[in-house]
Amino acid sequence: MTPAPNPSPHLPDLSDRSDRPDLPGILPAVPDAELLRLDHQVCFSLHAASRAFGGFYRQALKGVGLTYSQYLVMLVLWEDGPRSVKAIGERLHLDSGTLSPLLKRLEAAGLVRRERSREDERSVLVELTGEGVRLRERALSVPRGVLTATGLSVEEVLGLQEVLGRLTAALGEAADAH
Image (spheres, rainbow, N blue to C red):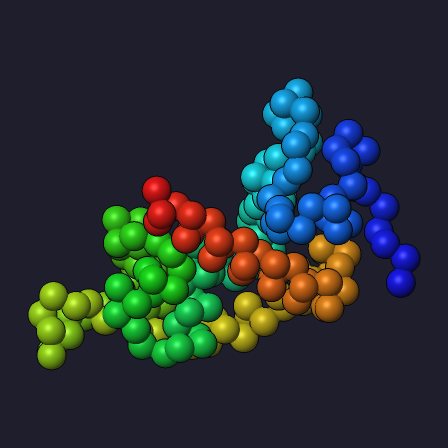
């Protein structure tokens, strides 16, 4: 298999690190002037991709009547069924201050119902209404539209999701260590 070309000609090709087995996963010395180039920042690439996804989803979700954040909440409920606000927040990496107004808007739209747990008064359970269940049918076209819009194959998307999952976990661990 032929190695992929170096995507950034300003940085050394790091695909072969056999000369530095003591540095697995760590960049070898790179000139400072190259480190701070915007086009070398993984965070900027992710930011730009996130903005592009946001713009695409804004258009794709118009017909469904949801914002992207509301769509994520609905995905959790369609997949998992009734959940506590805390469980939804954990799954989406959102705090209750962000999630509560979102749920309030979904409830006002008649898509979800919130009620205090009978077992634990501190916990609020969220479940789909009939309208929320029916909305799933209208949303089925969104994931296929996203896949088509990316121009990536299913295998590439799955590989990207796997890499992003590892990246999220590693950065979460690094943040927790500080």
